[in-house]
Length: 162
Image (cartoon, rainbow, N blue to C red):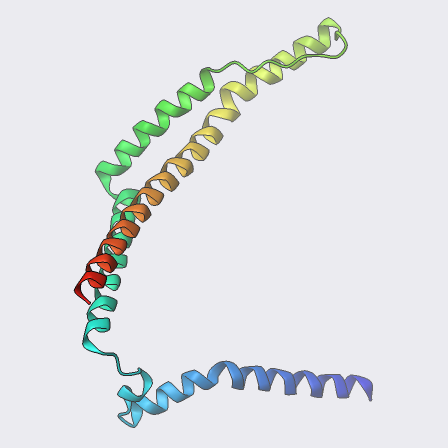
C-alpha cells in the first residue's frame, strides 16, 4: 500500500514540474500559432532598442574574437609558440627536495630515477596544457576588458546625448 502511494506521489510531482517547466514554452508556441508574436516581447522605445542592438553586436564581436583567438591558424601558432617558451622556462627551473634523514644509497638512486622520469616524461605535457589554458584565459580576459571599455564608451556617449 505504501509503495503504491509513493509511486502515485512521484508521478504527481513529475507532472507538476513538467507543467511548470513547459508552461512558458506552451504559451510561446500558442502565441506564435495565433500570430501574437508581438505579445511575447514588451514594446521598447527606439533609443533603448538601438542601445540593446549595439550591446548585442559588441557581445557577438567579443565571441567571434575569442573564437578566432582559440581556433584561428595564425593565433594558434602564436599561442603555441608562447606556451612552449613559457613551458621551457618553467621546466628549466630546478626544484630540489630535502630529506629529513639521509637515505641509504639504494633509496636515493630510486628517488633520483623517479625524479628524472617525472621531470622528462610526465611533467612537460602536463605543464604545457596548464600553460595553454592560462594563456588562453589571459587572451579571453583581454578581449573581455576590451568589450567592457567599449560598452562604457557607448554608455558615456549615450549619457552625454541625453
